Image (cartoon, rainbow, N blue to C red; front, side, top):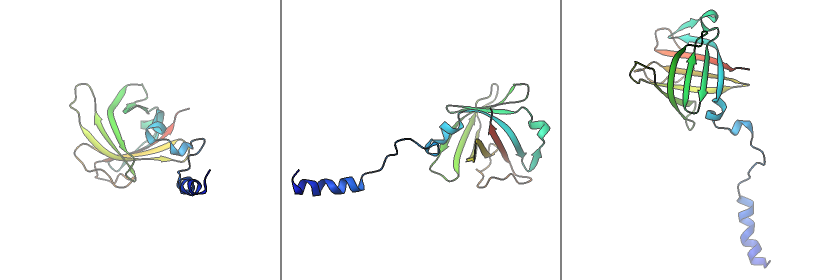
Length: 151
């Protein structure tokens, strides 16, 4: 290879992006990480802690862009289409309910993956502003839940 051609190629090699051979699990999109069934471990409803007894058996199922929550009797209690904006920190989640006999309502929230197989979701009830922090103060119109991947 002529010397000038080698000098022209060298900068391209030096500044070429490095692509890992195997993708790290942390590079997966949040949508992929959320896929599956999650057991609700803790919850706060507008500043009031939801008891362990009330949450027992409650699960959330994420499939594609749909979230469905079931109670301990496996009755559907919430269904919504959702979108994620992973460019925001924390990640924004926008949900539109799809419940039979109810008009669609929008809720805006934030969501984050925790260490291991856990996540937190904090969202405002329809008509309220998106929360900025993972908290549900007393008197707010904010819900906060922590969930763990079901085995």
